[in-house]
Length: 332
View (cartoon, rainbow, N blue to C red):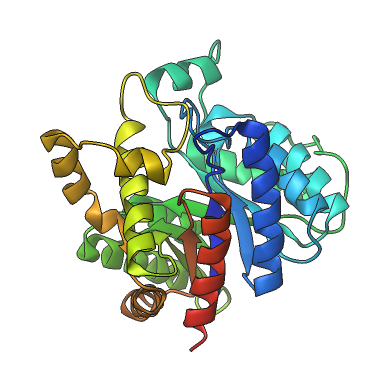
């Protein structure tokens, strides 16, 4: 089973952003050593407890500190940015580290004030598909096809280009990925099974409709994972995860990911307990064997090619051990 990582770059209690970024480099190095396929960094704005506001910057640091694992964005929210500039950034990474760069693209608008700040003074917002077409034009350096910037070339000129992916949770995104002939990444996080099945089926049928057997569909399923050495450790990590997930939606959200001590000493409110229960299906948890079994079942049930885990648990040592345990038990 192919396994990959999506990292939010959490800032733990009593740590800072520098600590978080340094730890993510260490985690990527471990993922490479253990045999994970790729290591991606998320894009999140106005979430004070994560340091992944600019994944392309973190990607370059990860590329420089690893040797062969693929490094990517999970993803770049392209509606906020110029496709030309994104192409330049990713071509520089590709020039420095050929055939190791992934560019996964999404269209989330984030919070209203974030969207307003990132799009201030824009007079002509582009459609998502138009931006995808632009990126493909700039990556292939095609100046022969009609385009509003037909003769424009994104530099540096190189002999390869990043692999593109489409992030999505809906059949609309699935259809777009299929039409473009690109790999599709979908999140399990609380989605009803029939919605996941429908989106994946739509993607595969759309690819076949447009390309026949010339393009093979490729699906990555992403999910939060929580596990530890024993049941007590797993439950502690799971409670800390749920508290983090609840608190990021507070108007006055905390600046860090809560520690296990904070969670142990906390009195949960009825509202928090209700929210925790409703969020339970957003995460795969249990013993390492149970988690590996569930991941294998997800792959089988949804006929996906790769599972991407989000090891979003408290503590540097706990995150490293999670990667080791998931890989170890997934091989058995």
